[in-house]
Length: 409
Image (tube, rainbow, N blue to C red; front, side, top):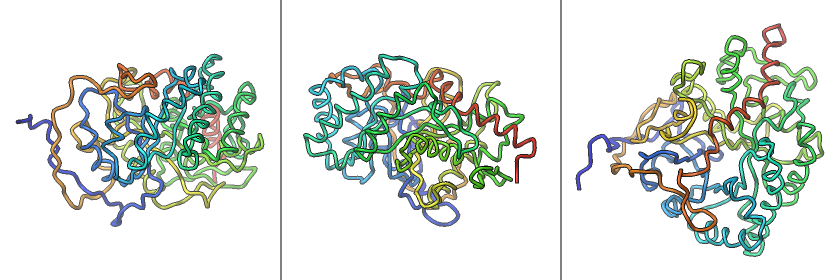
């Protein structure tokens, strides 16, 4: 069968940074599928490996992906969408979902974590927020009953907007109206040993105030940085300051030992006229510099000995995502498998991989009732939810105004 030349990926390079292969212990990538032109999961495997990623986060539990990655050694986070939380409160339904979507693929596919919902607490939906912890508990109980709780963690991802204060990082604090909701979840993490997940996008701080937010500070480029006057710690980039603000918030409510993982962060390569900074060059700097930091095993100023666990958003540009142009342009790769930009990485060995014609419509993931969803997965990174993320960095934008007013080293 012949395929259009457009749908061939003519070469795939093994990527190198500064002359050496990435140390990949903590590099993760978000693999979204709101598109009708993506390669098959089998053809995604070499792309994941080419960027040095050993961890993949899905927005569902797509059986085609989980089967394709069997015996590759790649670690997976699978997700239960927000729309299924009320069902997952039922222990029987949670047990059925875990058996079908997790146990069935172990041990060949290395599923290590389940995220239950995304950014629930900042939706101001009491029905959703009230279902979150019970759903997490039901899923965890199912894992315990199957003897899988030691290898598969249960968590949920939060917007940075759960913070009321993020500057200085040492004064990070949760929103007062969320403390009563978030504390029982933190107790769950503490008891089960699961990480606290945050979606953090310094891009939104720059987009919201490009004249006052120093671009080099958000792109991990050389800059003067900021000094936390309370801790005397020096910060050279916004993401590390945001992470440490989360650590401080956790400590302020008695959970300073919890691990913090960044479940989403990235930079768009294209945007609308009012989306400042959405360019290939800025995306290349943000993601390329971030991967270098992760591979160097350098922790944040507050946690210098803790490896960074960060999932870059995202693997592909997704042409069917709603919202502004940037939403469809966060990918490291185009649907034909070619890089959107070079990431500052030098090419080395070429490997040829042929990509078949894309499907006519997105392949839907498995849902708790065994059906498939119509849009690929819950639009976790949709425009409305990203507005919530932006709110989480509002305090930090004030910080950067202070930087301009000589609060710098």
